[in-house]
Amino acid sequence: MRLKAFKTPNFRGWKAVVLHRPHQDVERLTRQLERLGMDVTCVWPELSAEHRNADIVLFDADMGHEEQFPWPQSDLPMPMVALIGSEAPGRVEWAIQRGAGAHLSKPIGSTGVFGALVVAVRSFQTHWDSANRIADLESRLTRRPNVVEAVLFLMDVHKCDSTEAYGHLRSLSMAGRVSIEDAADALVAQAAGQGPEWKQGRE
Amino acid sequence: MAGIEIPVGVLFSSTGSYSVIGREGYHGAMTAISEVNASDLFDFSFKAITADPACRAETYAVLANQMMAKNDCGHIIGCQTSWSRKELLPVLERHQGLLWYSVPYEGFESHDRVIYSGACPNQNVVPLFQHILPQFGKRAFLIGSNYIWGWEMNRIARELLAAEDGAVLGERYVALGDVDIDHLITEIVETRPDFIFNNLIGDSSYAFLRALRDLGERDPAFRPDVMPVLSCNLTEAELPIIGAAADGVISTASYFETADYPKNVDFVRRMHQLHGEERGVSAMFTGPYQAVWALAQAIKACGSADPDEVRDVLTKMPLPTPVGDLHIDRSTQHATLTPFIGVVEGAAQGAAGRAAFRVINPQARRLAPDPYLVNLNSERNERLRDAVVLTSEVEDPLAGDAGFLRVVK
Image (tube, rainbow over all chains, first blue to last red; front, side, top):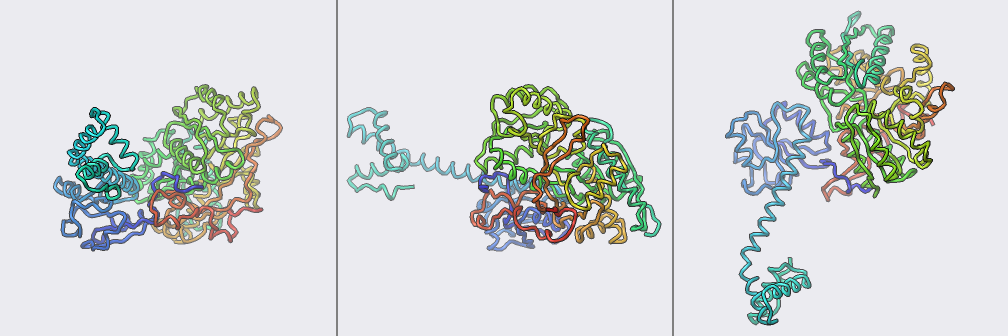
């Protein structure tokens, strides 16, 4: 059977790091994670740089604080699950800011772990899919002036209207297998008397 | 322990929509309790505390709470549906008791307070499909009752078929107890699948099998030897109710009455003496039966009925029972089981004999439990790709000893 075709979430072999002081909750959590085939490391009081390579981090939201994390809040290197005992709004807010995509309520029992992992991983993927898409769209926005310039250039060369000129630009981008923006950049550079830079513009 | 009487909860539905299998479970547990009490192996006895939740999920927790709080039961043998099991979990946590749950279920659970001795998906649907697909084809029609069992079993079936480049020609659900299934037959006639995976339960399933048999009589292309119906929970218990329409259904179970090994021959003979020849022995009966015996053996081994002590000891040893040893995996608290596959024969012959399963995979081996299917699939992790193996096909480390689960060839 082609194993890759399976879509059932599978955490076998994943490196999980649990950031929590020694406690029965940690023992129960570790047992559940190991039942899912994960390699579990428990650390306290703080994460070290090597934990950046973990596939998932489960952290204590009750006694947790910024200094425990060797990366800034904005990084979000892996999916994270908050272990929440106190549901005080400030703690929940901090857990979210710190990157929790899901949470488990303490006391941690035998239920909820698998579901929390699936939710955390999905929200992590969704976060990065959106972030990458936004970054791409923003970059295309900032490069819009060159697209306009390229269209004007092509209108002049082909003696045509803007719609047709845009069609030419799209043909160029497809032929060169580059984005419209890259094709526009190259054309503008060419028009400015420099050589074509298709390769540099490749994505 | 000498002379003490240990209360044990027996929680099966003897009335209500799925009471046919509930009564099997009840009889299995009660038969084993009287055997344990009559046996000179043990210096204690069990006192059965029974209750009938009548197939109403919300009743289970109330009755279990009474068993644990009032009657001092540390152990409950019972539950059929996942729904009722989930209802019991908070009660078990509150009283730190153990539930002995012994029917096949859809997996994706591993609760500290539950001993799972029924098959999970790597022990039923996966080996069933591995056996059937090469023989009948990969174009399936999936049906089920509209609740978690049907949804999850069909979801796994869909993935197995996708992995095999097979096809799902239809997937339909009907409400629990609904017997209006003509639309399913119409769709099956239109799509002509290679096989049907049936996760309907109770009356819906019986109605479907009867309608499908009528279809097969009209058109041989839909006879079970051409287009079989597969099941993961049809047992001997339901064959008398279904009658001729059960003929040819292929089911998988960790126990069949006809499984051919010495202990089972004796066991079946004894059960027939006890309950009558006409009554089939099924996995629905042997599950709770084995659970009671395993509980007794574990109590004997650790010298205490305390649920935590019992749980600690029972994963460290094979638990001998009259129908064969029970092995509980320490990390998941699920049983190692043999996925027998059987085809129903003799159902259409009326009074000439009793319907039974003919085991078609006598080469079956015991499989370690894998309730989360972690050893079967791999969604991600490129660096781990090479490490992924189908451990369900790897040599079973326990295959060498002579327990009930070893198949006699």
